[in-house]
Amino acid sequence: MLECIDLSKNLKKKEVKALMDGLDSELAVLQREAKARNIPVMIIFEGWGASGKGTLINRLIHPLDPRGFKVYTIQKENEEEAMRPFLWRFWTKTPAKGRIHVFDRSWYNRVVKDRVDSHVNKEELQNSYNEIVSFEEQLSVDGTLIIKFFLHISQKEQKKRFEKLEASEETRWRVTAEDWKHNKQYDEYVGVYEDMLEKTDTAFAPWTIVEATDREYAAAKILSTVVEVLKDKIADVDHEKTLSKKTAPSILPAVDNPFKSSVLDAADLTKSLTKEEYKKKLKELQKKLAILHSEIYRRRVPVVLAFEGWDAGGKGGAIKRLTEELDPRGYEVMPTASPNDIEKAHHYLWRFWNNMPKAGHLAIFDRTWYGRVMVERIEGFCTEDEWQRAYKEINQMEEHLYNAGAVVLKFWMHIDKDEQERRFNERMANPEKQWKITDEDWRNREKWDQYEDAVNEMIIRTSTTYAPWIIVEGNSKYYARVKVLETVVKALEEKLGIKGKK
Image (cartoon, rainbow, N blue to C red):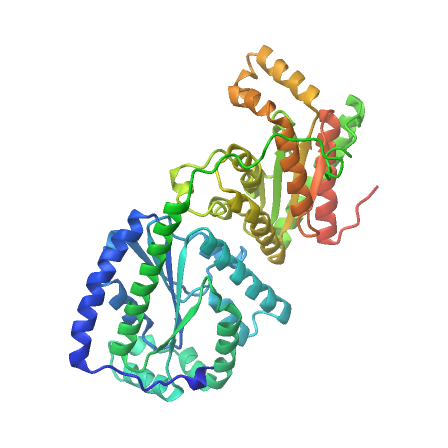
């Protein structure tokens, strides 16, 4: 592939000025139009060392309003980044609607430099490719425009540029021993780059190979590409707006269906524990969990626990008993409310990626990313296309966490409708608990059957070997709290290779 690229392409100087002036003007206008339409844009620069990434990025942003873009220079992972899934630091840098983020190097280091330096094995490499493609696809289908440039120069040209940089005291620092090593590994990198381009060139995030020997030609090609792609994206958005109508709630009232799959119906809500049994088991399990918590910190194992369930289903009580004996420096509980304006301006998974734990820490989510396929689906806060594709997106996110070494467990706190009503009335009658009950809770009760259908589908489509759902029979609070603790203890013992004592 790369050997077929004509690296001698150039532009005459008299052609350049008129062309670039026109592109600058167009790009400035298009930035404003993209902002007005809330289009997030990511522009990625990859390629050979000394291929001119810095110079060409500077030329690209020259006509842009600096208030509307940000440039990220991606270096080797720092300690904080190295303790999280490799895409975490890029998810947290994705642009809000209407903004442009430019990346000087990117997530592709994982399948290029790390591969050549043997920092990833064959399985990790394949996982990384899958994760990169799903990352770009998730952003793209959510409306992000992704533009990827690969700057290509010959080995001879790269050597020439290194020598020129070294000849000046002002630029000598920019050339390292590693750069020269990479120049000698040029042929090896060609194969790695071609593999990268081939496996990640998609309809939603295609690569543009830029012949970068002549910098003026390269700059013109880059600006021209950005202008054309932005025009197409803006036209697509305008077309979609003329066709779209406000989406109605996606679930119709439930109807009897003898073929409907239901995992919730199989839950035995008569399960219970006596107070004495509960106290004994609680003490034993909390002691075990405290020891395991120290061990996951020592071995740098991240843990993600997700809690969903019916209103008044016992999430708060289970989380409280789960954390009572843990070192507070090693865990964090994230209560999930409706997204704020900043969160709404990003992909719906962005706010959850921001809160994923680093290695050795425990993250507990009280309500989660599954709101996309429950409340947002039922209340019409997202389109049917959005919640339908969310199952795949969520599975991909959880698999990425698992591939990074995390233990991922998801709990559905299950009670029946009568028990919920009893708990609601109990809260209403207790001044200390009235804050827990809202008008919205009562309104949601009226949609019980719709939520039940959504929950059954959610569990069936997203319970995986790497991130299973655990249905917790919760009519008995004692039983539910113990089951949650037993499940977490067992999962951590299995992850750490510790045989639990009966």
